[in-house]
Image 1 (cartoon, rainbow, N blue to C red):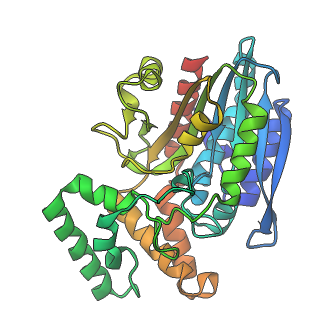
Image 2: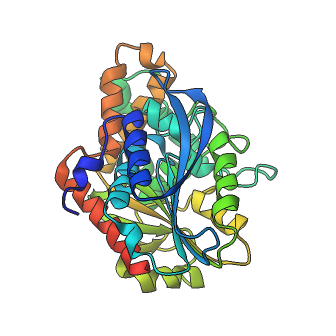
Image 3: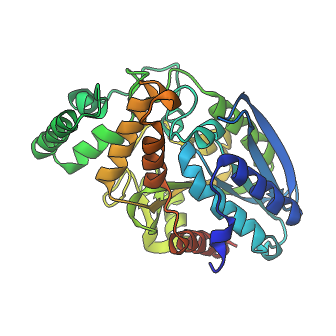
Length: 356
């Protein structure tokens, strides 16, 4: 989308300001859910909701950003560009679109993929009263994912461990071990939490307020970091045989993949954010998915996550290595180049217009 790049921002505070200004200009109804903590400059944090279309609309499209905090640079820019594009004028009768901005505002503001509890929000939407899923592969490669330091020899040993695991078990098994989530190590990467975190509880309240009156709901959660540069993939957690998955294939074609089938850039993870929409909106036609945009090679993304988690355990922003690691993780999930910004915005705009 031409000129989309100007709607992307260099900080959470700037992104929030631009989003709210664009939503106001578009005539959206706004609401804010204040986070109990502050950003690194003492700035307030919130999940902001902008709704365009009637409150009683039977068909509602949701577009969310920042589930994985630092990925909000991508998602927020897309949301703001779409609001500024006049998309609201394309809405037919009985249809609304709901923008949910910065679902994990703390992670966005502090430059982390996880939340204030070191929880990967996209592993937190499960029944915490039941036994947690086990990830034995994670235990085997724990030392590679949670190294005691970032010395070259330590990181080389970690890469050797990952290579050996892949050679023994296959690439798919390694991907699941890396990204399938874990519930045993609160300070480790990919921790899914021990209960519903603030963003989980807040999103559920937003769903009940904004989507409960609708008969047909489509939700698109914006993500970045997996796959080829600027290429979008629609990720569904539904089986390929389900009506939900077939609807998405009808709308969007070959970019749709199920985590329960072959070919997706994502592992089949427990506690995904898309599952909460089906849970909260039972009895309606609900079609939730993630929209994932590639950034840099996966090994570099993994290295950034490992370094950021090490930083979290080693002094955070007070550590002398903090500026370099914060740039590393931001670059892993956000390509600060105009062609990338325009490409990811164009693809999202196309998806929504196909729905309309």
